[in-house]
Length: 491
Ligand SMILES: Cc1cc2nc3c(=O)[nH]c(=O)nc-3n(C[C@H](O)[C@H](O)[C@H](O)COP(=O)(O)OP(=O)(O)OC[C@H]3O[C@@H](n4cnc5c(N)ncnc54)[C@H](O)[C@@H]3O)c2cc1C
Image (cartoon, rainbow, N blue to C red; front, side, top):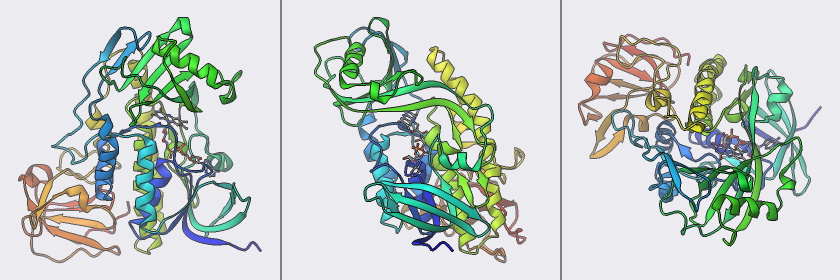
């Protein structure tokens, strides 16, 4: 019989943004997890940069919003997308103004640009300081799952030491090529890759050419063989040039420093600019949504579950929001506050969302590449998705995200979503009546008594009565009078 070196309620395979976020969300709900990633540490590349309002609203509730905003401060003045043959030549602005970062009527979360390599350490610190265990340089070699848990074999890539881990649940946050998804045989119907990209991270002083920082520059210099994009990083002398390549004939090894410098200078349009190549990494731009997000005790989250092009910055954001949806359900089941079938709602809620987003994001990317106007309505796309009802008749309907409110308590200003983290919350405008009978703990706040409705928005956003809100900020149950006992929430 196999013996176990480690036991953990949740094993997380993959320490990108999604795995790290899952470990933080679980830790803050009192659930221990072990995260393994085969890389030595955080991402070297900026990669996903745009953190949308919903993700920032969640980061706010978990206490890391201020740090993330600080990490994003260098990007505060960046806006627009420019097209040029070379950076030194004339630019055509495809658009110059960014959509507003704040949607004050809808959320306290403000859009933030911050490099993945600066946000990941914030997630790591917050998670580890709350009890999560992270092991980098550690690969998940194999796993088997049964009806009671998952047995995984992991290996330290430095020492070669192998350990066997027994976990109640496994989160596959192992990226686009997800070995876990592959092993489980979970298909991604209609998945295809349309672009193979090589990211070249380099150092150079480009201040002579960049009077105004764009969000990114689309560069097409046929004479130099450069077709790609240039993006800034938080460090003003560090840049990333992304070019396409053909994986059938080339790999990272073919991108020598000499070749990268030729490409960098071709993009700048000057041969005499000193530059130093720091790192080269390949990645795929494609689209694919897993047909299932769950196999027994294994859950897919992030790029392992869905992948699509960068337009709209919904890749990492949707992944972090998957982790947010899953973490409270795992926590409730592990604490015995909910039956195990609550976990069925993870796939039921998140998979259709990805299937819905994928074609819209492909259209968005195509429009962006052809210079057309941005096609989507971001507030609706980011905040207004409903998990199980489309009832537009009542305010704050079940299945939708709880509408934003500014609330006051002892002189403190609280966004309603700051209240949602580890338990159900009942908001009510009545101050009498029995408490609902749930197996899970519920925090009850009486609007006007425990919390002041600072902008008098409760009537226009919630109407009257009570709203039972899940730990992820989605409405589980509504009543217009307080309160017949609600049925036990099922997700
Ligand atoms: C090189 C690269 C560049 C990118 N650049 C951009 C960009 O410029 N713009 C953009 O919008 N998006 C970009 N993306 C995509 C974006 O970063 C992702 O959508 C998002 O970060 C997904 O996060 P994730 O945590 O789900 O997956 P990932 O960030 O891919 O993380 C998966 C992690 O799992 C680990 N892992 C995999 N298998 C195992 C195993 N068996 N054992 C242990 N660990 C394992 C990997 O080491 C990795 O750290 C890029 C992706 C990559 C890989």
